[in-house]
Image (cartoon, rainbow, N blue to C red; front, side):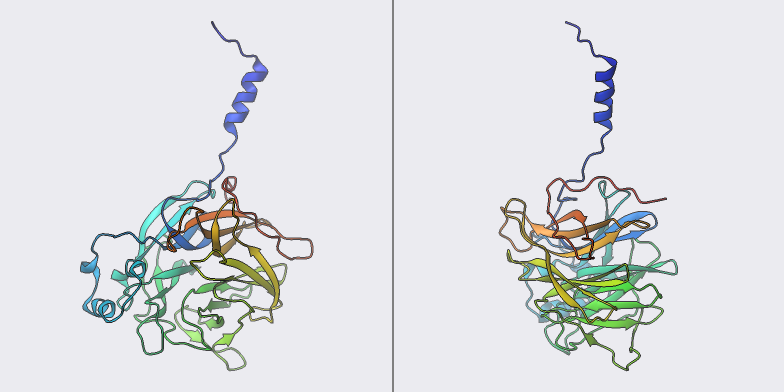
Length: 349
């Protein structure tokens, strides 16, 4: 029997086929965490922490004698020992992602040996700078902290820019991890960072390779909000600065994102509550996020990691993107996690 379709029916089917697919959460395969999302060269880029705990091929041939010594001198969590590189992902539309392997590797950072975490990227004069934590130092005098690498391409390879950590000690009680680099409207670049329930902000030099003092003579300003644990992030919208951070334990279900609002890059910041928490129908342990604004619009997206409901391993985290919306008074609405993800959103040309 031959089926007949009307012109209207055929048109409806064609229209349905033309509807773009959603991204799906997680957005990429594999275990990743701490995603930072940026816009570079007409593409979205995500730089995450590699977060697997499975055995990986022996990479000892890539380590210098100094790096081998660092690894031998310290007992580290097994997953930290394989965190020796960053992969990155690029996309034209938030839906279709291309993997870029080993955009930074400890092979190109002589002092970093393990626990390479939470990258943050920025462009300056045609070059790309990647800030990152390494070696999970526990006290002053240990080798490690926050480093900075540079590349001519957002996809790397990134190489150590200064031959040593940019921040290698504890200031105001803040462990030097989880850097976030923010450029204000006047061009001044700030670096926010800190673990162990302390958050600092510093001013960076024009070449992004050193820390400078503030006009008041201070260098490391503590801006720790109540409940802060790690993963600070800052955006500016309509003249208001939003300090955001992660609370709770990184392996626990209480991991979440909160925020505060303030009049300047250094505050004072008024805590406003949480915007991202676990959802027993979607995922647990949602946190360590970043946010991207579509240029020329007031549309915002949040990238974050979360743990599948059936996973018990702390390292097993996946990347997701959902919409982030504001109320009329400038406060942020709680983010609704989804499995469907977002619609394609090509960047303005």
